[in-house]
Length: 320
Image 1 (cartoon, rainbow, N blue to C red):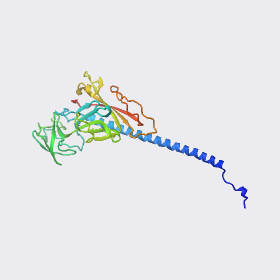
Image 2 (tube, rainbow, N blue to C red):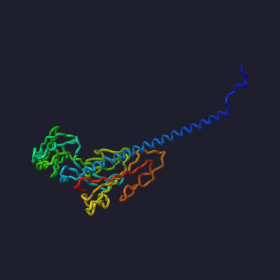
Image 3 (cartoon, rainbow, N blue to C red):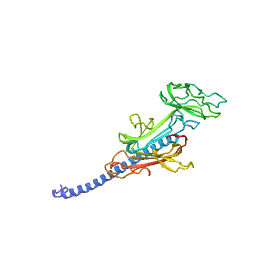
Image 4 (cartoon, rainbow, N blue to C red):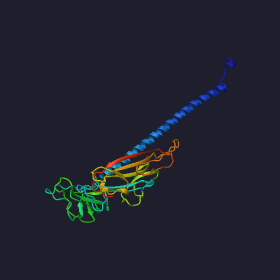
C-alpha cells in the first residue's frame, strides 16, 4: 500500500492560481462574445437601415417618374393636381409631396383600348355613363377615373361598379378614340399618393395616403411604408429661363411654376430603429440639403444615414 505521505491534493495556492487563470480565460471568452454580438448588431442594424433606405427611395422614385401621366394626350385633366408639395409640414420639419397619375399596371382597372377609329368605333362614346370593363382591379365607388385619348383627358367619379361594368357620375363629355393611332383611348383609375413623415410605434416612419396636399397629416388611414425614416426634404429643380437646364433647386414655397420644374431632389434621413446602449450617443447635426436648415435629432444611441436621389420628371403640365 502507498505511504500516506505520498497521497496529497492541491494546495490553496495552487487552487488560487488555477482559479485566476480560469477567470482570465473566461473574461477573454466573454469579451470575444460581447464584441461578436456588438458587431452582429451593428451589421444587422445597418443592413436593415440600408435596405429600408433603398426601398423608400425606389418607391418614391417610381411615383415621381409617373407623376402627370394621364394617357396619350399628355394633358392634365381639369381639377386634377399631378404634382404638389408642402414645405416643413411633416414631423421634424420634413416636407410633404404628392404625385398623381393613371394606373397603367397590367392588373389595373381599364376599358380595353379601342382600335384605330377607321377600323372600329371607340368603346368610349359621348354621353355614355355605363361602360363594360376588361379588368376591374382595385376600383370602388367614389374613386376618380380618367378618360383619355391622344387629344385630351377628363376626370370622372365612379358611382357604381360591378365585376363587368362601371357607372360614372356623368356622361362622357366626348367620344374618346385613338385619333388613328394604334393605342390611346382608355379609361383608367387615378392614383394619388401623398408621402409624409409622422410618428409611429418605433419612432418615425414614412407614410403614404391618397389625401389632398393641404389636408392634415393623419396616420389613421395612411399606409406605413418604411420604419426609421426621420426626416424628408424635397427640392424642385426649376428652369427659370427656358433653356432646358436647371438653374436652381427650391423648396415648394419658392417655386415660381411647376411647369418649369425639370427634376426633383429627395433627401431622406433614416435611423437604425433599435437603440443600442453600448454605442456612443449620436450628437451630430444633419444638414439634409444645402437650402434647408440643420436638423438636430435627440442625443440617443441610434445610428443615422442620409439617402439622396434626383428624379427627372418625364411628364409635362404639372401643377403646384
